[in-house]
Length: 279
Ligand SMILES: Cc1ncc(COP(=O)(O)O)c(C=O)c1O
Image (cartoon, rainbow, N blue to C red):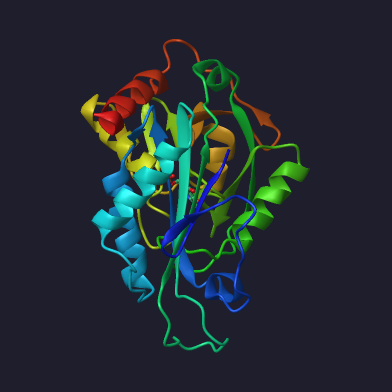
């Protein structure tokens, strides 16, 4: 069951009509967020709304509603989906106007859908997922959660065709992030993840994980991993996102990683990040 909202109202499934000159559609001229609700409670919604505001300012997009109004619409949408886990996708586009590149005189548009979310279990985390590495050919401003995801889509498709779950981007010989997640490595008791610069999306999950690692007193280096280090030397690694929390890797390209042992530092980090994000 999926719930839809466009502009100023909820609409029936099957009644979504997209104006052809809608800038989200013509240019990818907009920004978005995905937030999860668990048993009706949002995870990190304030952080997602804050990032929406940052993305909007970065692309000079006026939000059609206040953050509090958007929060209420998102919560209402989640509440209409009867499921333990609900993912709400919401986007703001620059609106509908005759197609010219420069900003039109148009009203920005909120569109969203809410649907049941896939719950990843610790059992599935013990199995893990595989990744391939691919060149990061995206633009310089990946900190903006923009609708333009063509390079991410091509990377994910390359992963799927290689029999892998996710594609990890490598730029100038260093891991940045993955097509729809952030990347962490673990080597000799030290966690590694790329710093939150313009070239990566500063994941909300990534932030909770970093807070958890610090809280637990574990060592963390917010520095870029070289592709060689990531591909050959890390003993464990995981990807993170709103819909997965933490998902360990079982293979990087052709190299297999050991399944997570019960003693792995990743388990306490998962537990603590859950407490922090659901607190
Ligand atoms: C490119 C990219 N990096 C990282 C993430 C993880 O971000 P978050 O933890 O906020 O879901 C996403 C999520 O969709 C993403 O698309």
